[in-house]
Length: 357
Image (cartoon, rainbow, N blue to C red; front, side):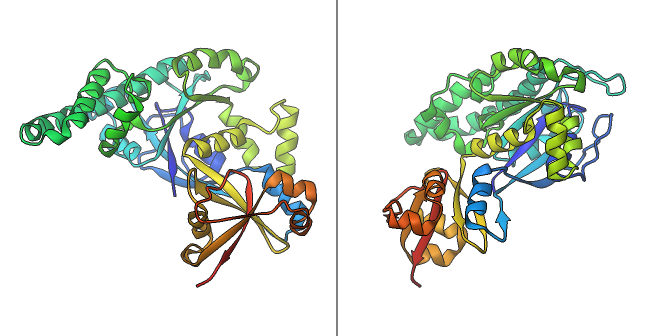
């Protein structure tokens, strides 16, 4: 399962965000390195489409898609040189598929550390860039020797040199002027700053109404990435309530559905994940697939036999199905399509698979 990792300075709110998603379990304390080993969790992906399909089918059971996340721990200045628990945390970052920067904006006299989210971001970016610089320089030394006898690696070597130059200036790969082709050539090096990035700015309860203003300088630093503002403390408190109590609390605070749901959906899409549905009286379920997968690969998410013996996929968009009111009515209206092996499902498709093994 693809997963994202929380990255930030100590006391930024990473463990509190983890607890909001996982329902507790991670130590959230006002001192550095409260998290020394990565915490692993799974969060449900909120999706109103699934609820509507379940209601239409009068399903006995509703099963949401899920996403895996890791609370890696606090990074400090000098982490790339082994400061704090640097080497261990950098290794933890290397193992995730996408990075979520948790940046502190709240003030609390009992919680030490800077409260400028842009300062947080720059410190973390520099440390990750320095770690990548060390990686690229080591690779360059080896590859320059190989290139003398193997001219086929010339493009990779040039891309590596370009990346090293950018990193030496403290520029992460995701902010660099490397082309998509160059980044593709570097994918086997698993550079930390070549991962997809999302940022969460953790505001205080007294800053909620100022969230958009607080986000502006962070968005200016990350113009190509999504930046989400939330009061992690309030979200974590709401997450412990029943769905009804949670909705009531968030509405009273003027937070709508809350930022946590939006964050989970954004992280899900950041990883290139999409959803198709199956629905019936017994169960309505959201199934995760990677964008660009074909119909047999999606069928295999349900069972390997579905993929191995795939014949066709009967498909309709979720909105069209809801408008008709049932699968039978949609079929009678000629809206259910029969798709073959080459079909690439779209996010929100409702599907039934025909197979033979």
